[in-house]
Each structure stands twice: as structure tokens, then as C-alpha cells.
Length: 419
Ligand SMILES: O=C(O)C1=C[C@@H](OP(=O)(O)O)[C@@H](O)[C@H](O)C1
Ligand SMILES: C=C(OP(=O)(O)O)C(=O)O
Picture 1 (spheres, rainbow, N blue to C red):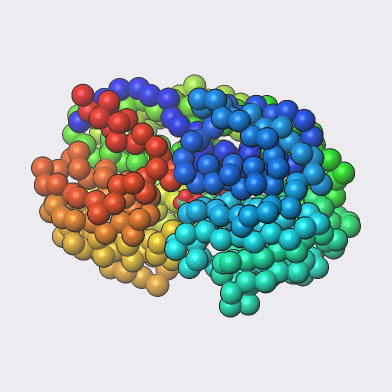
Picture 2 (tube, rainbow, N blue to C red):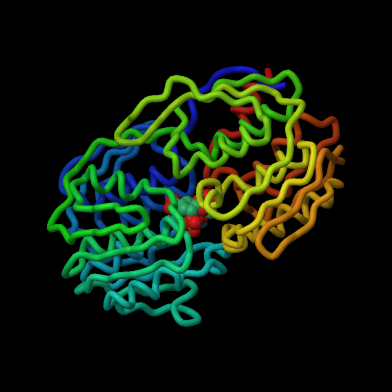
């Protein structure tokens, strides 16, 4: 069983943005509760290569910003490691700066599509080279002299939106970016606090070019995507009760809470407050023996995209048939997360069917033990780890190191909650 109360580690999306926006602002920035995961450390390493002074002290990061036009041409290739957020957002910044830079990442990044960002950046006048019509790494960007854009995004993606907002800061006129479905809005919130002129009208975002961004101190709230693994472990493990403190509750990220409530899960938000423009609160979660199935589709998908693997695990422990659809984006994450979940859950004896854009899960299933192929994907690894506490049969992960991408100290935390 899990019992206890703990402070959640910093949000990955917000930590990335804090380093990036601080680096292109003018002045000193302090980032508190920064996520020291491998992905966010890749962002720091890339901006250091562009001449930004970034110091790490415990959970704090100090950035001496170079200003909007002050980044230096990197002498080395920029290696983003495993991080889609780093490469896609950074392309927007590089497009505005008058130098050339080459971006690479690991084997997983090499398979993830970049055209969704390079196409609109080319429309803004940026010169970009990359494999398969600039869809895959290595990607080389020759930045500078951007035109404004009026662009309807074909995919619901905060990374694409953020890259275009960043490029628009450097453009010759006001840009308009139209979203299909509302995705996480940390870029809009944080850039405004740095002095950017951004206006949001439903799904239309207008961005005016600026001469400078001004430094800010940023507190990074806890990562609800990381909390999701503790939430699910608690819901499915007998006699568990956990308080998770400092959870970021921005409504573009709280789809998991809505789903857990729809499934009859025992979850309560307490002590809600606003910190640096972001809603934060604590979560009280309790074991729920009578979970029920749900349907997840369309508009809610971007609000829980990274939580779908662990929701699939939860669905195996709920009475009835859970349907997850409109989630084809899962195929282009660190792994093909639809296939990874379906194949691995089948190994454990779950009743699950793969769909082109999701999966159908019939619960409630008594699962066997087995060896999980994580595809070195942190979310797949943690999703399956949640089953280890509720079952006598052991789940073995073929790779645990990948968890450091987003949740360093994950197993120590679980240990402290199960004492
Ligand atoms: O903007 C971000 O920080 C992120 C957006 C999402 O990706 P997409 O924008 O590709 O949906 C999400 O899956 C990723 O983990 C982080
Ligand atoms: C998809 C993810 O991250 P990224 O796109 O930044 O690699 C994730 O953290 O689940």
C-alpha cells in the first residue's frame, strides 16, 4: 500500500520553457523547483552552447539572459537527447536568430516528425534543411528575417504552437496562429510575464514582434503528468491514501483528474492557489475498489496526452469497457505508445484491442506478471510500474534508466510511500 504526503517535482513543460525564455530575455532570472530530468538538462546544455550563462544550484537554476537577439552561433551541433519539446521549441527561436545551427537527438528523436514545425517556419521565410523534406533530424536552420504568418495548425500540438509563437516574436509584423483543439498554454502564460504582446481569442493567438523580453523569476509548479503515476498506483492499490503537494492544475493539463472522477476514482483537490499565473493545488487520492470504465476522445486528448499510457493501465482495473480514441498522436511520441501499451498489456493477460487511433480495454482483469518492453520510453516504464504494488505477480521492466528523462528519484519516492 502507498501512504504519505510529498512535494511533487517540477513540471517538465514549464521547466523547459523557463530556461528557454530566460535565455532570450534581458537580465537575471531565477527558476525555482526546476525539474532536473534528463530532457530539461538537454535544454540547458543547448542554450549554454549558444553562450548563455546558466548555473544550477540544488533545485534552482540561475540564467543570465542574452536578450532576444543575443544568442551566439553554436560552434557545436545542438544535441537535444530524447526531448521533443527541446527540439521543436528551439527551432522557433533559432529561426529568428541570424546564424545557422544543426539539431540532432537520440534514436527516438530521429523517428519523430519535425515537418509540423519546419513547414510553417519555411512559410515564414526560414531556410531549413533536414532528412526527408525537413521531417527528420539532423535539421539545419539558417535563421533571421522572418515574415509574419497566419497559420491554421493541422495538428493539435503545444510544441508546434509554441515554436510558432516564439518565431513570431522575431517576425516583421503581427502573426496569427489558429489551434484546432486547445493545447497546453504555458508558453502564452509565461511569455506574457516576460513582456510579450500575445492576445488569445478562443483558438486564435495573435503575437506581435517585440524588441526585447524582460527577465523574470519563475516558480515551477509540480508536474501533473508525473503525479499521474502516483495517482493511479494509489487508486488501484488496496488501503492506499496519498497527498501530492504542489500539483500544477492549469486546466489545459488536468484531463487526468476529469477522467479519474468519471471513473469514480477517489480524488480531491485541496488548497488551490495561483502561483506565477499558473493554478496550483494539492491532491488527496485514495484507493478506489469500484472504478468504472469511461470513454476518452477528441477535445480532452491534448489535456491528457502524456497520461494515456497510465490511464490504459487504470482501465484494466475498472469494471466495463474503456474506449480511448482520437489519440493517433501517441504513435509519434518517444515510442508508438498505442502499440507499446497494447502489446505489453496483452503479455500481462489484459483484454485489450488496438485501434488505429487508440485502444479498447475490457476490465476488470486479474493481470499476470511479465517482462515489459519499455522501448526506453519513460511513460511506458512508469505506467507499468504502477501495477507492481497492487499485484503479487512481479512486473519487470527491461529498462528503468529511461525514467530519469522526466522523473528522477521515482523509485525512491515509491519506496518512501510504501514504508
Ligand atoms: O509542449 C509541451 O511541453 C509538450 C506538449 C505535448 O506534445 P505535443 O505538442 O507534440 O502534443 C506533450 O506530449 C509533451 O510531453 C510536452
Ligand atoms: C512526449 C513527451 O515529451 P517530448 O515530446 O518532449 O519528448 C513526454 O514527456 O511524454
